[in-house]
Length: 181
Image 1 (spheres, rainbow, N blue to C red):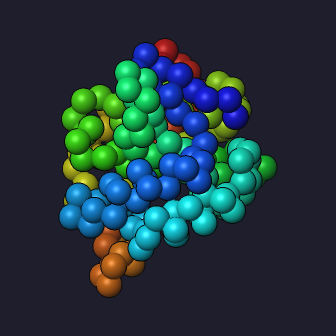
Image 2: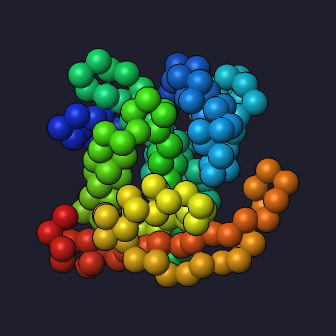
């Protein structure tokens, strides 16, 4: 994948040299309390990235992309993508931003760009997001992008010692393209 550029961002595959920046905000347990991945060390992040495929369409592997702010070339967040189902025609997406860059439209811009790429370039059929219902800002974000709520699963995800609910949102390519996004 070539880097994806938006007005303010570059989205590209994570590289080992990104490990320290990713660890810095990902290890903030309070800020990222609804996230499933809290790495224990920079080395854990580096090892994950080193062994991650650098190509799309690898089934059941979470690919980490980074979000770089163009104005200062600063890594401000990451996105995970997992391909699954029939010939990898479905993708699950997730986004984590450093707390100092939240509320500025960066997540909306990055997610819109990656969903455009998944639907328009890779011709995926369906994109989904799995969100903890307590994470109201993520729920609002994904709804603003036009995703629909498909299910609410009670205590279906074990997160740091407790069973939590999980809400699934999704959108089909024809819906995304049909709405002029």
